[in-house]
Length: 424
Image (cartoon, rainbow, N blue to C red; front, side, top):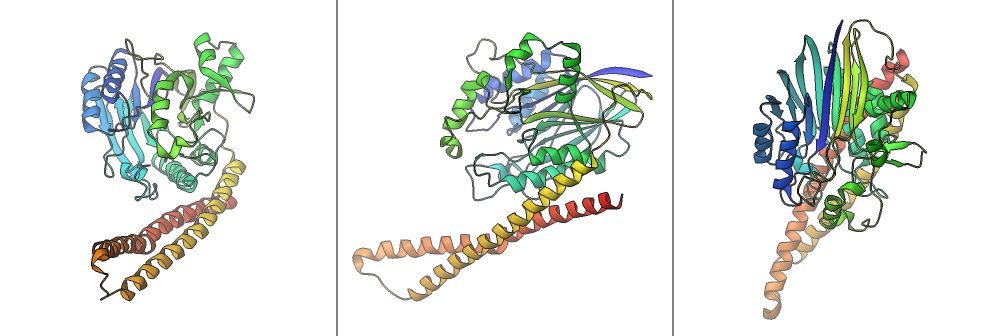
């Protein structure tokens, strides 16, 4: 039997060109940290600048000689993979729905987010490594992007499920922007049959009574009365999260809220002749960049140490897939899609009404001349009305069609999966 240890790290680097404080210094620190530690696979998100990617790649070239950046959208997908082992093949799938182009202050649409795959050869095993970054949640009370994130979760799970046939080991690491019990996270795990490495590590630690002091310091009790290894907006990274909230209009209203949560994951699945167990799961980076008063990112890095055994070992094998939970999650997602389609059609009517109203107003004032004192204001008003008319017509006629087709594509895909589950 082949027995080996694989260390997998994921980190959202918070590499926004303008909005991220100390970006260049933090990227240097991240690169230095990756270069001095023994990581086998590294999945990074929010590496938006090519110069930052090249900086990290060059500084880690000895320890992680193989790498791939997934280009997409206006800014690039922001996701990349660094590997100690050869990368045999790559693939990228961009989300059909990913935010709104007119909400520039959120910016997700411009990132061209999706899921990237690198097929890696490790001691004769084919390992599929996926990294991704789902749409952000900007308001917990009124999450206008929930259907986008759920559709992305379904797309992600389908991509993993359909491209991992024949893989000995499947690993998904990234910022999923969804908490463990959220619908999007349930769809990812149930539909792709992936397992949360954190859960397996906690079960193992509980059985052995081996939780370390460092882990205890980083964990916080949740409402479910169990401990979570929080990764975003935690007190450890207050310098980054405070700066981020101050620079974000959408989060200003919730500035005093506790936004800490676990949204960065390492998920895994083993092939039929391979067993994967979780040796440890921790946050490896120091609280602050050495010699500085700021953190590495507004997210915590997560490191999973996986033991991979090739053979027919059956002990500690992951549980079989929960078909009932999978079907329930997909049915809940279908209902969400139906509500989103109703809201979308209402929104389209409102945009058409605005466009028609402005068109009638412009036609009614055609040929009219305002008094001299108001001539410039009159012309400026007509120009503004024309611009708004063009925007409203574009939203109603083009954007809403793209949005509707994206939702329908995901919805019909879910129906196909449910039909197969019923037949089985």
